[in-house]
Length: 178
Image (cartoon, rainbow, N blue to C red; front, side):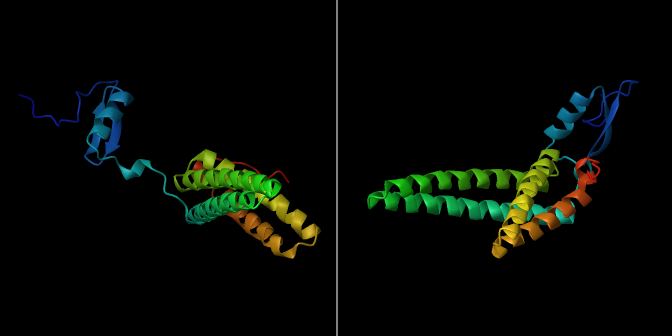
C-alpha cells in the first residue's frame, strides 16, 4: 500500500512541477498536471496575473459605456417603432440602423471590458484601437467647434496613457511610434 499523496506521481526525470493549493507536485506531463490539479477544483491564484488598478478603471469605463450603449440602442429601437406607427418610415429605418450600431458598440465595449479585467492581450489591443478612434473623433470635434464632444479626446488620451503604462501586465512591450 502506497502512502503517496493522491496528486503526486512517481518522480522521474520527465516530471513537471505544478503549483496548486494543495502544494507543489510533480507529474509526468503538463497535461496530466493540469488535469489533476484542476479536477480538485482548487486552482492556485499564483498563476493568474493580477489586474493593475489603472486597467481596472479603464475596463470599468468600458463596461459602463457598454451598458449605456445597450440602453441607447434599445431606446432607438423603441423610438423607431413609434416613428413607424405614425407614418415616418424613413426615420424609423434610420433609428433601427442606429440602434443596431449602438448594440454592436455595446457588445464590443463589454467584450473589451472583460478582456481588460482578465488581463487578455486582445482586450488591450481592442481598447487601444477603440480609444484611438475616440481620440480621432475628439480631435475632429475640437476642430469643428463642438466643444462638448472634446471631452472624449481628454478621456481617450488619459485612458490610452493608462493602458500604455501598464502594457507589461499583458505581456506586451510596444514602443511609442513618435
